[in-house]
Image 1 (cartoon, protein in one colour):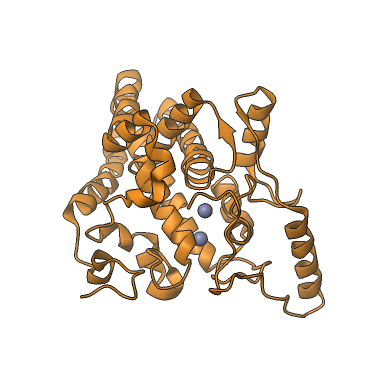
Image 2: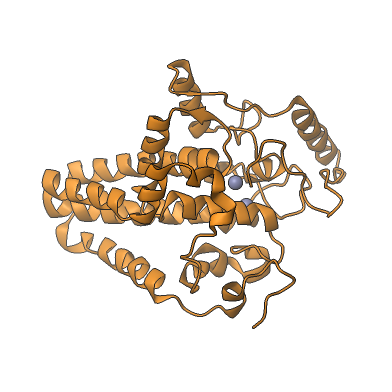
Length: 312
Ligand SMILES: [Zn+2]
Ligand SMILES: [Zn+2]
């Protein structure tokens, strides 16, 4: 099939199965069932929970808010650490992740969005797109800013290194239960909670901002994903470090980043502009009064305006 108006690459339109992505994905799911034989030990369960939260934080603070959106700054050493923690969740390389996510924001719920539940159904947006041949490739044109760092390019190429180190450490420390509960099961749970952001947060929850996509805010998902559930906020203003825009919107990723900023580990956390906060308060008031708020501003192509410093 030919390209569609330049936004849908041929591989996305063709939708052939990519075995190199599909087989490891299915295999890790099957390995998680190994807990039936190894059983649950307390150290393994505690490790699994700890690895869930550490790696989920790596996904949201690292892959998402730092590498994909560049919403704060840090040293080259901590940048590498962020990439390593994020990649220990076995979600491919940091350049791959950022490039795919930047595509999602460019075409959110429109033709060209690789994972839109509105266009392709819940299951395709949740896991189906991972099975598409070509999805494993990185569109390097979208991540030129990250390609400047050879250590990130190396890590991206050898994307199995971080999860393998964590997996081997689990075996050495706690044997089979630690590997299957602490690593494989915890990895699968981290995956699906990450995927909820692609699937559920475009379906389940409340819309504050009338964005051009179907993104939603959802407290339960914000708890599970350490703040990523405030996805409608995020689609309204992707350039700010926090996704929970108001004090009652718990955003644990942001709280941790704020604490790290007190120690000088990260800095220049980008705030939510007062104009956007006021727009959100006005939208909440409109909905409370039973009216539909005005549409969020769009550019002359009908898309959400791109923040001034956004690299994508
Ligand atoms: Zn989204
Ligand atoms: Zn994003």
